Image (cartoon, rainbow, N blue to C red; front, side, top):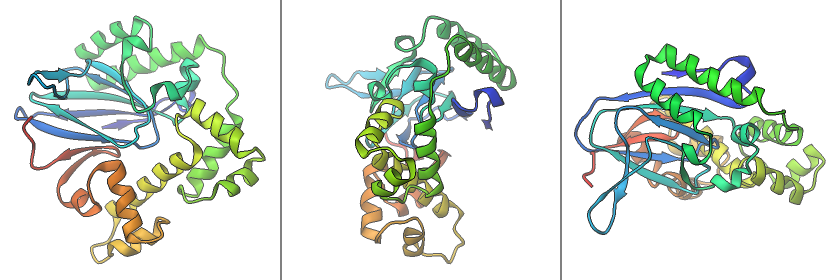
Length: 274
């Protein structure tokens, strides 16, 4: 289930996601970048990040923040899971906390290392409530954050983001420089601070997800090459290389051997043991 935040939170939060997986056998999930930072509450059982050299399972925190990812991360479960995911706008976490987004780059961080202790009380309340009440709790928590912090000037970033998204990630840096009136160096510094990626890498993620949208919505007779060109890739080999870099699989494997839970979280079939 996907729920939009109220209007006052929409500059910071894209949406909330509520995911339930009732399987108790070992499950493998793959998380990859969608251009947004996310906050995950796992309210039934902890996810597992893998097994160390001593064959001991390494559990993720019950609640964690993930930053912009270089590639993908595999996560596992061996019990029923209920995930509540706060998907921030590309520059939302920086606006809320004032922390440079590059500090979260390619990382999974316990929430208590980022937010104050109030978030632990929020986690406990989320466990006890149904989804409509959870939405109210989340709205109240994040509203209190923006009320306590003066708004930052995001004009440059918002202006540049609008251009990149309108062009579906297919653009040249020279075009972005001309559109915004700022130098490439200044744009790169602002993007890394606010988003955690430079403009070109962010654009690559946007283009990949535009391709995914076209792929998921394609009529049966549409071939991969047509979608590849429609999404702005120069050829199919370039597309497959970029797709595998972000997801670890090919577009064909994505279509035939995954369960799509969210834009950037898939279930891998068949499930893998640890």
